[in-house]
Image (cartoon, rainbow, N blue to C red; front, side, top):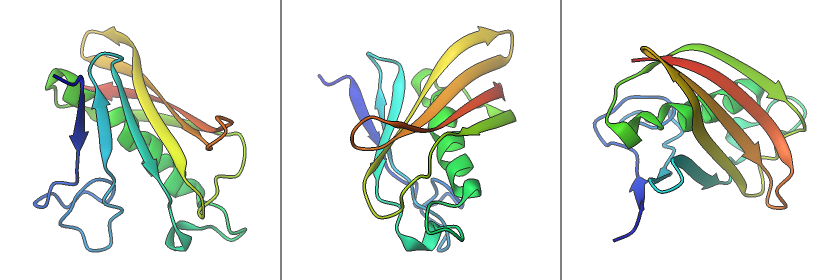
Length: 136
């Protein structure tokens, strides 16, 4: 039995990032890796998510990282919401080639879950990192 489970967009969820019922949404899909305790998504954003310079808009980068970190709750069947989110924009995120988005949990304190998300290019270069506090 595989330790990886695919999380496709829920056709009844209107979430902008991962819902399937939002016609304007991103419809993001992630793999849950139970062995490594990580979420992973591979995608090509496309020109609809570009900012003025032709790279991914900063808000879209935040959505990707928030979704990758938020999906960690699926590993433990918890429901948690984003309480704090900070983003380090390291390099421009291209919209026309595949990127990798990953998330994992660093620490747990009471109802707080402290998580990290990263976006990397196909060569593994770090493009953006997010840190989030999620509350159960």
